[in-house]
Every structure is written in structure tokens, then in C-alpha cells.
Amino acid sequence: MLVTALLMMQRHIPEDCVLCVTVSTGVCQLGVVVNKLDTVGWSQERFEEIVGKLGAFLKQAGFMESNVTCVPCSGLTGENLTSPPSEDMLLQWYKGPCLLDVIGALM
Image (cartoon, rainbow, N blue to C red; front, side, top):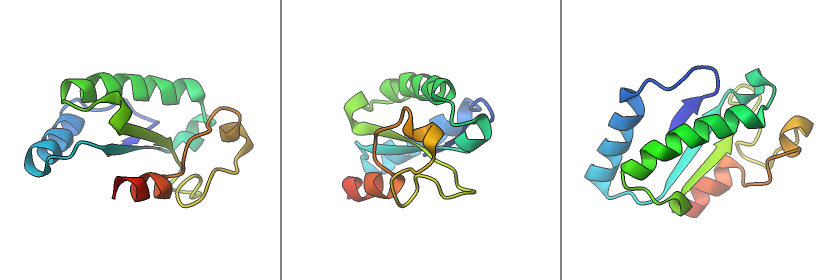
């Protein structure tokens, strides 16, 4: 699932994606990319806001919190996509895996 750090989520888009995936394929683990976090200065507060709002919805959709991994990324610069982050502002607070590692763990 991909969400952007710039805009608030439109309610129906994540619901449709998640419900379609969970119903049709029995998915129990989910990797969430919080993209464009570079445009908000790698804000931990913004990341946590998005993760919190999305987490509440995903819990209602049947996902256990332990089965959801959220990854802050920048598609433009490639930060935290295929290798651990190198951006100092992100390294100050994010200690988790890069997106490629999350995808590898889902398989």
C-alpha cells in the first residue's frame, strides 16, 4: 500500500485497496510505503500521524499491528527503497528496514 506524506488520505482509496486485497487473496501481512516524506523534511511527527490514522483503519480491516510494517521513503531520491537510509534527518528517528527488506520478509 502506498500513501503520500503530502495529502491526507482519501477515505475510500485505502479501504478499497485493503478490502480487495484481504478478501481476494487472504493477505495477513502488509508493507506500507509512506512516500514523499522528504517533502516534509523527513518529519517523524508526520510519519507517525499517517501511520496512526492508517493503523486504526487497518485494525478495523482485520490486520494485526504486528503484521503491518510502515516504511518512510522518497521515490524521487530513492531514499530507503533498496538500501538502509543515509539521510541524516531520517536516521535521527527511523531504525527500521528499507522497503526491499520489508518486501523480502513478506515472501
